[in-house]
Amino acid sequence: MPLTFFKKSWLINEKIKRGKCMLENERRKIDQLDQEIIRLLEQRFDTVQTIAKVKKEQSIPILDESREQIILEKVASYVTNKSYVSAIQTIYQEMMSSSRAYQKKQMD
Ligand SMILES: O=C(O)C(=O)C[C@]1(C(=O)O)C=C[C@@H](O)C=C1
Image 1 (cartoon, rainbow, N blue to C red):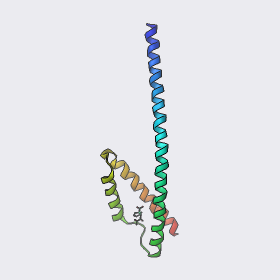
Image 2: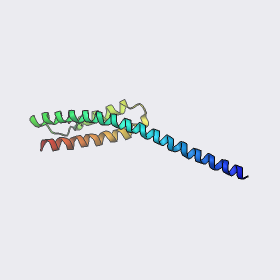
Image 3: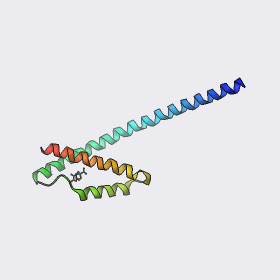
Image 4: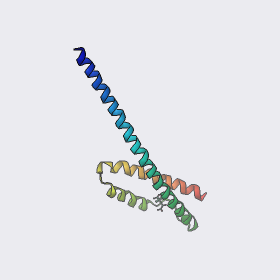
């Protein structure tokens, strides 16, 4: 009986350790992915900066709703796991909103 108790608590401990180890591994993956995402986001914002200059020179409005709609549709078609579509589209909506805010700041 006591042996079963110790065995049970040992098993529980092992499970907790395994869970912590998995969590650390997954977080390391996220840290690496974030580095890649940020590198690409910087490239995107470099491009947005150029777009802002052209728009300012030619008095083109910052917001282009039809372009944003096309981007959101492309996003939906690029995502392979369809259960992520809505979440990733939300990120894109936020990103484009942030892009507009950045462009506005550049133009002021
Ligand atoms: O393509 C443009 O005209 C942009 O200004 C870039 C961008 C974007 O970040 O993708 C931002 C604002 C527009 O509403 C549409 C798209």
